[in-house]
Image 1 (cartoon, rainbow, N blue to C red):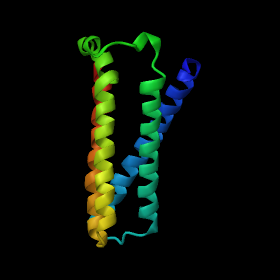
Image 2: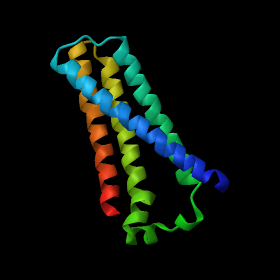
Image 3: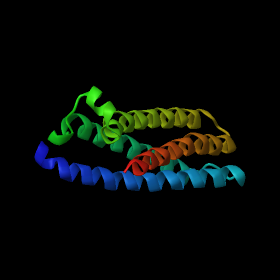
Image 4: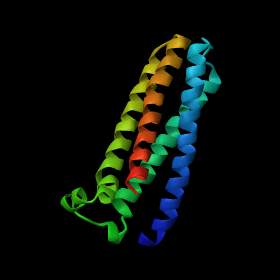
Length: 147
């Protein structure tokens, strides 16, 4: 499986960028719908489903990379990873943040499905998906600042 590592990591990065753009779009669109009191129509539902599909697919790609396709040079114990910021980010923080983001988005999706008022749907969408988008941007910033 190591021969597929570079393909998977490149695909995961491209997929993550597409997901991030979708996350930013759904956050802005939800804010617009909440402020302007727009109806929550089929487009928003499809956008939410696309966002969640991309999120779960990106998580699966990340899990495959994390557990099954680790580069031999990055294979290290948790104690060794804690000593180096780069290893700590990839071995612990990145994965933990992403799992937390998936949980937040799943809870938000449940709230959106349960409410019938369009304003609340936009509000929940903005709140939960917006917080998730913010956490993704913070996580990316943490990584970029460490380099």
